[in-house]
Length: 350
Image 1 (tube, helix red, strand yellow):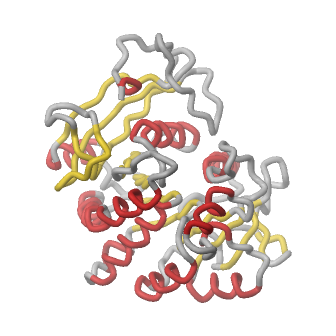
Image 2 (cartoon, rainbow, N blue to C red; image 1 turned 180 degrees about the horizontal axis):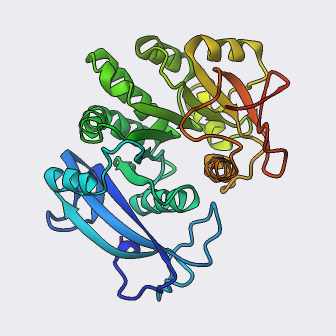
């Protein structure tokens, strides 16, 4: 965890992002933000402020090296051990409950250590909208390619904690917009938490969430049963898929060749019909640049591209697509007036 040790020097030109953390990871010591892969018996809370270098390139995490140079790398400035009351007070201080305020909760995926998850949230916040209040929900991944089963168990362990956290967050941020993003196995954890909320009769919580699943590592049949309980969401749940996602191809083989949600083919008529029936926006982002060799992190490029389009007025953040269905997202550089294609026809997204 040395990479998260606060630095004493930060260039004046660097931008800083404060990320709030709720985690089922256990602390090594009660007074330190040093988290293990063991499962905590209650949520732990923290915040981290990280500077983003002036040389930052969208989609990239400029990892700190020794010695740390804030002019060229992400650099932790400070971190704070928080209790639940101080965590909620910090969010209230950021005015998360005000109408128009935007809060984003990110649930990371399999084989992800804590610094990776934290820096990813910093990068995405810096690349999209620095005014957003970013929250990382971190669960105790083993951060090992051989730890798939252990990670799945840890994600399952964290399900009720995430559901309870979302309940408390929607109560705290009463009038603000809350976006919930689950990546990979974190997508499965996200949908399970939504299912728990529906079974508990917390429709009021579900109505407050704008949900996106990025490269979700979810068995297709499992997702169908999950959604039969959750039901259609408004605005529609967004599912980002890539047909050439190699990480999900490996996951599929591990699961006995069962298809994963994140590798759907949006050209198939049954996928388009299923999307309309379940009120889903399934968006193929295969044309975007991947930040990893497994084509599993294209959502990072999508987030940045979508933010740029929003800045030009080509899309309106928060309102979603005009109708549910299966879409293809056009690569950056094409006509921004219709960045989505539905069933072979150009479609304005708003």
